[in-house]
Length: 254
Image (cartoon, rainbow, N blue to C red):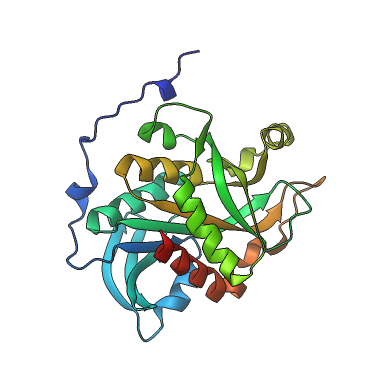
């Protein structure tokens, strides 16, 4: 059946472009890291070596973009909005500012109860059960993440000794519609976790020619008779130092 998602337009120029809304920032770091936890971003923003270099503006408020010196390299970081559309808009604008390589991390719901709370997931592919990715790439059920980006993340995590598992994930833009039937179908497709942004971000990054890598920390679980929040409510704060360090290390390897 022909759908709106099959009406892909590959034109690079649109009526509204990121450069129409933000300006390039002189000296903007080539490497950029982002996450969804405001508490994690605020914790790092308060470090003495960190300074604000730009801002992202929306009707929801202003998001500062910061710069940190890590291992002798300047890296930008900022808070991403939750959900594929808002997350991709932020990405588009920091790329227009000057970012050239991008690492994103956040939490995910696990589809296998044997996965430990807090264990890291490295997406190797994502089911495109959202709308944004279809605006950046032709319609398809899944997107494969780039092998070089997967290698960068797995090398960084492997060097740290932190437990992780690579695998396919499910990206959805309707978290309150993760029904038992949909969960069962995604598990049959080989998905080990669910989140809201990966497929869209991977598609947008490929469209813009920006190396993109992602990892997720296992939080709540859907592989049970009822939903189990587990550590979802803390949004990774207890491991913030570890997760940000792994994101910085992954960026250095991109």
